Amino acid sequence: MFKALLLVSLALTVFAAPARRQSITTLSTTQIETYKPYTWYASTAYCAPSTTITWSCGSNCEANAGFEPVASGGDGAVIQYWYVGYDPNLKTVIVAHQGTDVSDIVPLLEDADIVMETLDPSLFPGVSSSIEVHSGFAATQAGSAPDVLSAVKTAISKYSTNTITVTGHSLGAAIALLDYVYLRVQLSSVTVKMIGYGLPRVGNQAFADYVDAIGGITHINNKEDPVPILPGRFLGFHHPSGEIHIQDSGAWDACPGQDNTSDLCEVGDVPNIFESKESDHDGPYDGVEMGC
Ligand SMILES: *[C@@H]1O[C@H](CO)[C@@H](O)[C@H](O)[C@H]1NC(C)=O
Image: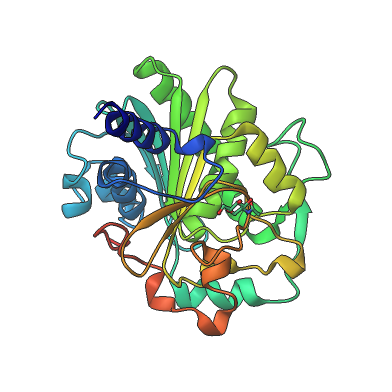
């Protein structure tokens, strides 16, 4: 009896501490549910700024009914939509960025002429020049960066918090990952987390290692989505750690390390673009389809 209890409590300990996992662990239903508000926030970033600033965007907004918007922006063309506000239940500032259509992003990421560049020192002062990121992602992030920063500063002082969570899907996840670095560099004494969905590879090995050294990121990949395997590793792109891979069965598995090649993780499950399925990009992520 005691032994059985011990085993149960050991199992609970393993589930309760996925960040220190060394093996692939399957998330419990309760753990999966903790991502639900962020999944809706990522989806809501597809809604027009005129509706996120008043939090009147229909089911996306209703899913996080207590949210208090601070600022919204973007035009959905040159600058992806974004919004910033505060979640009183999660006690965090939320920053969310719009993604893009899978049929638009895949050809861009498959382009063998993809250019990497160092992070702009005016936005990312002090970040090593060995760190390089996709130049298109850098340009897109730069487009909203100053407005996002100023909205985050407003939210931090208005709600007396120093916790920020950035989120997004697809291109929005890539912008969110750069924002996560940017906000941490720009603001002292804040805790920044990033929870992304269908994240493409954003930067080189030095970038992935830099992100891992900070910690606090989760990127959730759905089934045979092609976007997370792009751009290819042979082009020098690498994912930071923090992957959760959704299996065909609907199980969520936390994968340790960068680009884990196990069949239970994205790289092993989707060895090349021909074995991918574009329709998996938008979800469902525990029942939520991305879009507004
Ligand atoms: C992938 O996960 C396994 C656990 O199944 C772990 O032992 C291995 O180190 C991981 N690979 C990488 C590249 O981190």
